[in-house]
Amino acid sequence: MQSKTERRKAFLQPLSIFKAEAKTALTVFASIFIVASAASAQKDSPSLSVFRKNVGVVSSDPGKSSTLTISDANLDVVAGDFDADGRVDIGTFDRSARLWTVRRSGDGSTLVVSFPQQKSSGRPVTVPADYDGDGSTDMAVWSAGAWQIRVSSDGGPVLTQNFGVKGDVPVPADFDGDKKADLAVFRPTENRWYIQSSTNGTVRTVDFGQAGTDLLLPADYTGDGKADIAVYRNSTWLVIDSTTGEEDKFEFGFEDARPVPGDFNHDGEVDFAVYQKGKWYVYDGDRLASYKFGESEDVPLSIVPVRQSMAGR
Image (cartoon, rainbow, N blue to C red):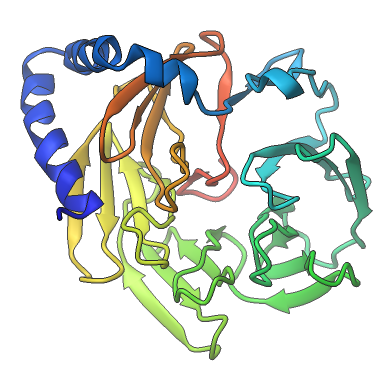
């Protein structure tokens, strides 16, 4: 049986040839697949969320279609599975008040948590991830190498750890497969990833990426339980397979599309997806599907963080 990576190569490589000849090729392929599986696509339509200027966060989930209004410039939008129900929860982090506010998708309740002020002079960056391995996203903030983490398993105080330096870009993910997010940073001055294992504390480095060009989006694309180092560059996904160590290249996207990786079919593997002017294109390893949700200027939200490869962008 072919692995998901092998199925991606078999499907997306021929697609990239068509794409080189016609920019509308991906739209054509999406139309073919949706016509063939329109009924199942509607039935299995995933929950999608976007950030809309002057409105806030809007979700496609029929049961959770309310809008979370965001009007303060000090508020950052955050996304994650904070209640471990397998669906994206949306919230905010107030950089000035150091206050998290998250709306849980499971029961509609709101979780509010205050973080202490950091001594660091850098701008705080939200880095939500599952740091304790309980299946729930934990609230966390990074600033100039200082990590503040509140694990959900015990609901205890905010813990502080140091890893990285000012100018780095935080990229936490479970790179060692112990179900706990590892502290990790991308250093733009070196185009190098620094990853500290949550299992034994060892640090490894990987030279990969182009600062200022790539978008950083590490996640488990291969289904081996470990996050793969990955970037999105000019409509191309570049992934270092965590099992083989080989670099795989997949053409999937448009020049004006945003990558929004996520586990859209709930098979435990992160799928390639892009958003373009209100339409989502998702390839889950078995089929290519498209979903209409959002407006042309909306920003798509995903449970997998997508970060610029230069600090402050």
